[in-house]
Amino acid sequence: MSAVEIEGLSAGYRGTTVLSEISAGIGDGGWLGVIGPNGSGKSTLLKAMLGLVRHTGRVRVDGRSVSGLRQRDRAKLLGYAPQLPQLPVGMTVTDYVLLGRTPHLGPLGREGARDLDIVTEVLERLDLLGFARRELSELSGGERQRAVLARALAQRTGVLLLDEPTTGLDVGHAQALLDLVDELRRERGTTVVTTLHDLTMAGQYAEHLLLLDTGRVSTEGSPHEVLTAELLGRRYAARVSILPLPDGSPVVAPTRSVVSGRE
Image (tube, rainbow, N blue to C red; front, side, top):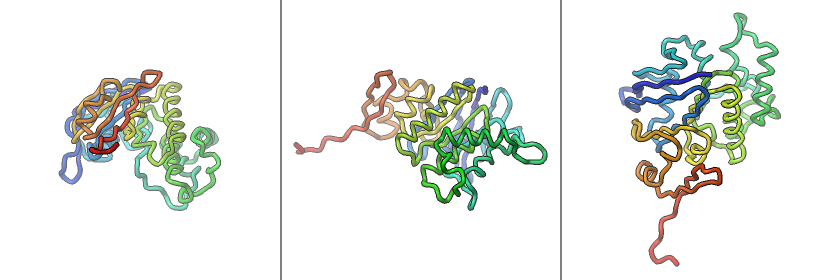
């Protein structure tokens, strides 16, 4: 179980500031959903938390500063599934997912039976066992996305950072993926931070939402506090209605504009 603290985090590229003074906290086993319009800095936030981009401010996991850790130790704490990964050429799905076990390997760097068992379990739970011997280049976009998540899950970290994990997935596989992440959170106390374009799914799965706009925190709170027609209309320049599901979770539904003279 791992609590995450983000304090005054600012980051950017080539002298351009993308994020400014982001602060947030996620308790043990919590789920933070990061939402916002395109270009608001969602992916940059995850990269800054990992130390992949220059930043100021602090990120702590269980009170330990992430920036002060060696890469290997950082990989034991934080699992990361990028939205646009660079996949090795000629590598099978199994070998790729095994890379997630690298931080845990001994001095000889050889995986053992337990590592293979973990990979098999992850592939099975992500409906990828039938693709285990296939090369990554033979997979569809959605299948590759699941393989990327599988590698992150194989790390068995206390914190999972997932950048648009449902990109390219049909609704069934998207639900299955988020259900699995939710199961891991409940079973093992895994703390989850996801960026999501799908606001309805963000509201159904995340306990707390952080709405970014132009690199700053616009609003944060529960899904009911953040997913309002007025707030989303202003930040996304969109027409939406908020509809309740039977369990009370919000559905964000786009509404069509009325065309003058149309019957």
